[in-house]
Length: 127
Image (cartoon, rainbow, N blue to C red; front, side, top):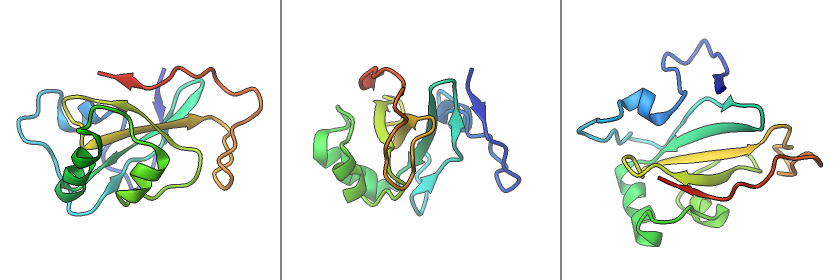
């Protein structure tokens, strides 16, 4: 039940990195600048993904070999800029240079505080 927010400026439908670049893409897409997807959501979370440049992806691999989710300090240290409350929650093994983020629906983007009755924590996912 993931639905994307419509955007007139977005020609690509950022539903999932695999939908954008193809599940079996031979050549990874490395943008010239860090790219941010539109937000999309399900019943509990809003999501977005961030595509790193090749140089920033190399820096990320130096941190943890792309084997664990990044802390907020780590991804901000790489130059990823977004409002508060986002958490890097999953590593998509075929495309580790695409960071997958989520935050509880209703999170205050200024403070990062989730609503009181927020969704249950499911922890990081590794695929």
